[in-house]
Image (cartoon, rainbow, N blue to C red; front, side, top):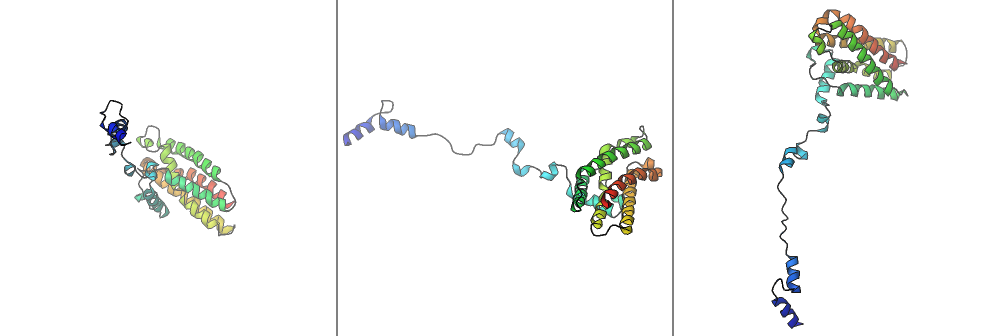
Length: 222
């Protein structure tokens, strides 16, 4: 056994030596170091560099809270109408539907459908009042109209919460009328702020807006 081991170890590589063949196969020049990032990987960045999910979805929570505060306090002059988003209106629609669900009313589709249809009608009315040739009509787009009417739905959410504890009666009806007028007048002020050319027609703008919010008030009362 000793002679075989010496003879095998004395053979040169390439002459069929078993020991040398095994050792050659066991040697590896593989580098276990992490490869350097390529240009494509550097361009896309890492997970730490990606923006938050709400920012990618276009939902600005601080902006929604600021606009909600301005509408709740009726300080529409401080409301920024340039960066409107649909995040707040969608949240308000879901909140109103969830409050109705607490009373056994399944109104998710009804509230969302009425919001879209009424927004289109109000958009047509306001644009016809502003005039198609008026440059301000470009700012009164359908998207902006949906955002404004959705944010003005906030007082209706407060009324729906109060309707849970106030029994149905005269007090509930008076509160519903007051909330409807509040929502309609606030929406009219925002529309006239966006299009100053119709500022002298604010009552006419408030009329279709009030009709829209009266439908949501009726859903809450009955």
